[in-house]
Length: 228
Ligand SMILES: [Zn+2]
Image (cartoon, rainbow, N blue to C red; front, side, top):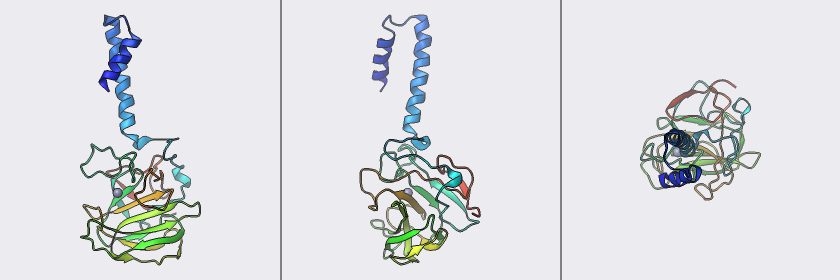
């Protein structure tokens, strides 16, 4: 990366390193650094991500927080968490869960539907200690996107496949099953039903019943589920 910048500098300033050029070089490196940082932290990606699309305005979002009104939930991992941030980070930009959210909640926490739709998949047979396969629900929305609720507890599915769910309905109990190091709910919306398939197909999502979140929820922040 640095080599590229020096090459570019030589092209821009073929005269070499004079005093004015040093100032220009400093400015150039600062601008390059800023650009690099933005690229490495696409949490702020918007409005036209070529792969994933863009965040809808949060005030009119189709989605609400997937917890009962009044809940105050902590986001342990947000969208596009950079790979250097945490060793277990799994929401990297370009990955299968780029636009997922991890809510830190104890096993048995009530999960509600973030958006209405039809239950198309449900698995609840795995123990919370099973780290290879997890329990989950997939709800198909009326625009053919899919809401995925992952890491549910054993027998934590409270709905049936084929059932239509209204926004805010109780659907599941959270857990720690599957690829999960601490009890939490992973929620993401996909363009396709398949979990974990490439190319990446998670979608940027905002929530209308909490504090302003124009580019989604941020990691290490609490969000309260307000009435809607
Ligand atoms: Zn996650």
